[in-house]
Length: 156
Image (tube, rainbow, N blue to C red; front, side, top):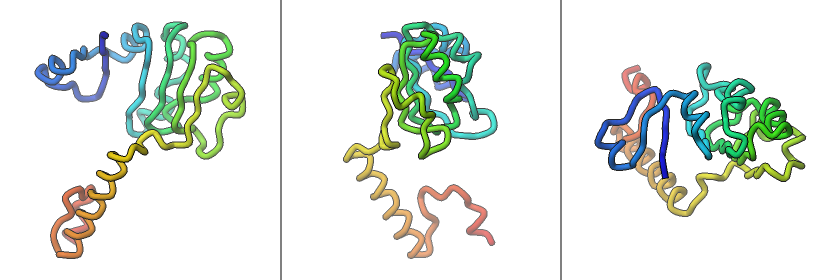
């Protein structure tokens, strides 16, 4: 299987080799991929990261999977692309206006909708709970939590 990826930061050559992954630009990834999975944070650059122009680049046999944040995909454009056969299907674990879903997606046979639980494996939830507990214990002991995002709060 060929693995293509795009990112703001390219992985090292050793990581690419280990995973058998090739770095490409977004347009190449969309045009060549059978499955496109989204795992990006939501921000100004990623809102509607996939919309009408991007969907037009994809293969008519391609499947789009959004496991990142809802607004990364323009749901109205997705519905249109699915109805017109621009892509074959979609799997969404998140929605543009969560908890609401674009109504047309609810009845489409080529769409799978999940209730924002893609990360809900036992192992993942256990790691999340352990991480939260470790951060809490560190904070209560006056230490810096291991996963602190906003370090500036400690200096104030």
